[in-house]
Every structure is written in structure tokens, then in C-alpha cells.
Amino acid sequence: MEEAGEALQREGIKVLLSARSGEHVPHCPHGPTLLFVKVSQGKEQGRRFFACSACRDRKDCRFFQWADEKVSQARLQSREEYNRSCQPPMSHQQYMTRFQEFVALPLAKRKFCRDCQQLLLEGDWQEHSGHHVLGDVSISHLRRPSQLLHPLENKKSNAQYLFTDRSCSFFLDAITRLGYKRVLCVGTPRLHEWIRSKSSLEESQRKVKSLLLDIDFRYSQFYGEDEFGHYNMFNHHFFGGEAAHNMCQKFLREDGGRGVIMVTDPPFGGLVEPLAFSFKKISNMWSPTSDPGDSAELPMFWIFPYFFETRIVQCFPGFTMLDYQVDYDNHTMYKYGKTGRKQSPVRIFTNISPERIVLPESEGYRFCAVCKRYVASQNIHCDICMSCPSKDGRAWKHCPLCKRCVKPSWSHCSSCNRCALEDHSCGSTVKGCFLCGDEDHKRSSCPRRLVSAIHNKGQNQSKRKLKQCAKKGASVPAGWKKKKKKQKKKKASSGTS
Image (cartoon, rainbow, N blue to C red; front, side, top):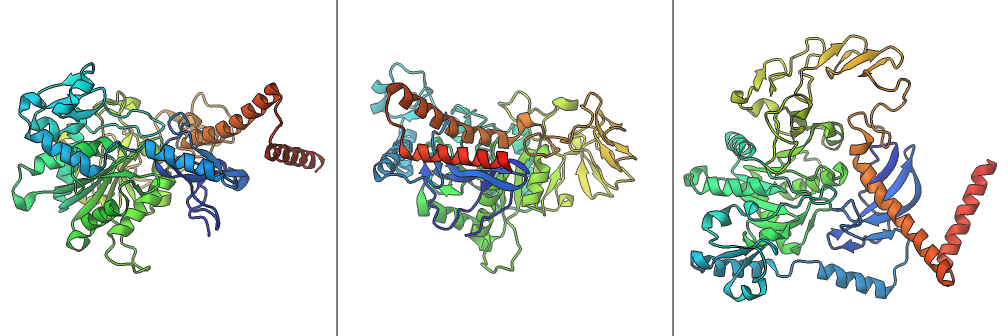
């Protein structure tokens, strides 16, 4: 089977979105794993390996397996048992049964355990007697569960930053203005509950329906199966199986697929390629026809930092980036209203015509008649480039030597023959990231670096096992001896060539 997608980098770790014929894709607690390989100059170097799709750190998910590794039946059985133990303690239906019982309780008996992140029935009180328990949980609390639950804040796995009311209000206004009646919220729990709370106040003709897909199973306590699906956006895995998949497809295809939009806010440490692969699968679920020649895409808002624009457009050539700054309640840096480099770098990428999306003039956005889109107040139109070039909200300047607009903090360097920061290292061959070569970010923020750490940990683990065997006087496994011989031969051949 051919690999779907090509590497977007020259050096580092490449994710392979389709395994070779005969390669079995193992599962971890987060569903099917992803296949990775180290690349150099666009060519594969070293062994392929499987790692968790959702977690970039093995402390969060310990799964690691070489693609050509033979796994014993006992180990497979142990792995399956471990995966089952990591799943939610109850099914979605059981959670809903408990929710109905909870709502039927008088206000004084409605309690929520902050330590266990669980709604408590009367029979649970004794078990949670020493915990931090919140009482008098009202219906308004239940309608805003993101305010009850602790946000997941691990940047390397399922970081959960929640939209401010300002951003939620903008999204809902834009969605209704565009004429959409249904919203598939992928990883946007705050927007989902905002839509539900506002739609309950609207007339039936103006109501907007919402379905939330999220990896955080805790929302199963608050939403029914037609309102929430436990889902991993990095591998397009529905934890509820085919029933959950069919529920999502039914939502997308309602009314012949008309009037639906997808809004997604993935963790910023995630890899763009697997996300795009999953979003295309969701788009295929929506498409009312299976005609290969049909190029229609599900209308989409993808919220991500502006410096990922190149990668997103490579995956979705029809996408454009809007100037609107998205901000979050629980993130100290991603805030609206700050100036210069301190303002939120989070933007909206969409396949909807930018001309149709009105940005609030009260916040300084204005319409550019030449570009035919709303832009930030500091995004000054360049008559030479014939565009509003700014990406970060600051006014950019045109460089006649580079023949393009650049950041205001950059100046042209005659030695490098390009614009760069004044204190840059002259003669450097890599303009941006030293790991993947992209110009729009540095190595410290490169998602590839996080995946590379997974590969290195797998190698370090093997070395530790070898040292342990040597200390105990135990024999080294035959497989490791063969591997070491191969490595020695490879080094010898490269040294003579």
C-alpha cells in the first residue's frame, strides 16, 4: 500500500499516514497508533516505529513499537488488557442514566467531586467524603460543564484551552450570518456549550444545533450520544465504535448535507498532517456523494497559530487565513487586546470565501476592497505586493531587494541577501527551524522535535536494558546482538566509502 502524504520537511521525523502492505497497526489507549520514520534529505533513515497519535511524550502514553518487531501473543494480550483498563469506567449510556438521576435530585443533594471530576449520586457520598466536593450544582452549572471540569493542560498531548465569551460570540454570530444551522465542534467544548445555551433562548427557526467530538471522555457525564462523541482527532478514532461514527455521519448528512460547518481547535503541539488527514475523512463522511471527481469540501473553521499557515495550506490548498485574533480564558499569552508580539497568534483558517466573513469593526477590523476581505487595523495594504501582508497583527514593511513585505523588526542583510533580525547569525543556511527547515518557526517550537524525542526514548530504553543485562550477568538477547552487528557493519561500510 502506498503511503498517503509526503514529508513536509527535509530533516527530522516523518509521519506516515498509511502503513505498508503487511504492516499491522497496533493500538494504544488512544486508539490506532501512528507510524513514524526518521528522514534525512527527504529519504528514510533507520527503522520505522509506531507511537501514540495523541501524546508527544511517553510519560503520557508509554506505547512504543518498532514496525518490524515481532510481538508475542502474551504481550499482545497484556497490551489489550492495559488498553481496556485505561478506558472510561462507564459506558456513555451508563453516564446518561446517572445524569438523569442526578437532575432529578433536589438542588441541595446535587454534588460534584472536584478531585474525581465526577457528578455524585447519594450512594457515592461516602466514598468521596474526604474529597473537595462542590454542592448545590444548578442547571446553569450543568449547561456549562467546562466551568466545572479542570481543563487538561498538557501541551504535548491533549492541551485544553477554552475560548473566551468574546470568541464564542464571534463564532456563533459568524456561523448564523453565513446561514449554517448545524455545527460539528471538534475539540471545542466551550463553543459547543455556548451554542446550546444561546440556542435555547432563540426561536425554533433560528436555533443552531451542535455536536461535540472530543478526546475528553468526562463530557459523557453531561451530554447524550446525539450531543457528544468520544473522539481522537489525530487518528480519526471513535471510541464508541461504529454507533458513534454513524451518529456523527447522520448529523453531517442531515438535510442532504446542507447547512453544516465544522469548527476545530486542535492542540497546538499536534502534527498538522495527521489532523488534516482526519479532517478530510470527516469531510468524506459529510459528502452526500462518493463520486471521486467531486471536489466539494465540508465548510470548516480550523483554529491554529498563524505560523502554521504554510503547512495547513499545503494540506488544504483552498484554505485562507483570517486576521481575527482568537483568545482563551485559561492561557496567559493568548489574549486579545495586547499589542506587538504579546498579542494572540491564534487565527482562523477556512475554506469559506473570506469576503463573506465579517470581522467586528468595533475591534478595529476593516474591509480591504482590493483584497476583498476584512483585515486588522495595523494590516496596511501594500500596493507593490497587492495584498495586506501582515500575519501577526503588526504593520509590515516592503523590502524592495527581497521584493516582498517583511516583519517590522527585520532589516535587509547584504551578507545573507535577505531580511532578518538585526542580531541574526550571518551566513546561516537555515532561515528558520534547524530541525525541519521551515522558515515560519524556530526549533524550540517545532512539533517534529517532540516526535523525535519519542524515537530517541525508544532507543535509550534499549540501551538501558542492555546495561541491566550486563550488570546482572545475564545473556544479551539474540535479537539485540544481531542489531548491534548490523550497526557495526553499517558504520564500517560508511567509513570506507
